[in-house]
Amino acid sequence: MDTKVDDDTRRAAIEHQVRCMLDQDADGSHELYHDDAVLEFRGDRSPSSGSTSRSRGRRRSGVRAGAAPRTPSDRARSLRPMSATDDLIANNGAFVDGFDLADLARAPASKVAVVACMDARLDLFGALGLRPGDAHVLRNAGGVVTDDTIRSVTISQRLLGTEEVILVHHTDCGMLGLDDDEFHTGIEADVGQRPPWSSDGFADLEGSVRRSIERIRTSPFIPHTDHVRGFVYDVQTGALREVT
Image (cartoon, rainbow, N blue to C red; front, side, top):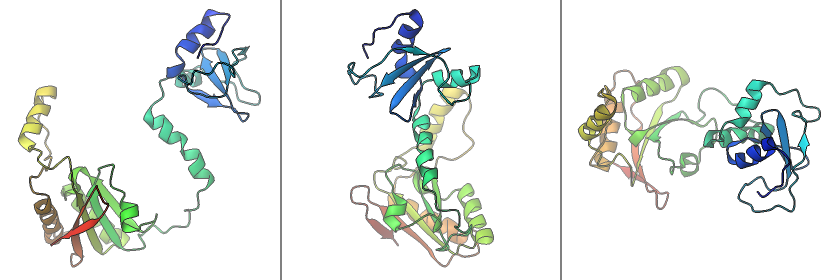
């Protein structure tokens, strides 16, 4: 942004715009907080937009009309670099505006618990036709059944009424081919301590699904083991293939 400014504070604020928080006014303008000064810009909030014709660089007081005075801690927060978490949390406002899930029951309507990999490409709600309130969804690296998975499924069944378990692994998994010993040795070299947990890497995708099914079925803590099924999700097509 090539905005003419009159003092050093404004110049510093503009130079560091990419690391400052922008608050959007109802009229579409933006305020850039820098110490006690506020710079207001009209139009595109992106510093790379190249637009100067719609920009304003006038100095205003540090408080918007009708807004509560900003404290030093408020200003410190507004000067921190924006993160992906900040962007995602900003979406919560729109979510709250349309929120209509308050009447959902605590117990899953389908009485199903799904254990799946944490891979960001897996759209389990879309693949299984799930909606909020339908099922418990437990995710970890690889979708393998660990001691913590057994804990969660036990609670899911004994306290919240689920009776079936669906296991979902997927193609092109990062855990496929992972050597636990090599991975843990690298961590130990980095931090000086070997992880006490197993990474549960696997060389055989279908074999890992079968082992996970067996861990659920043989657990003495899980009461309902008659309906435990495993699948492989194809990340290229979205199709589920059952492993028997």
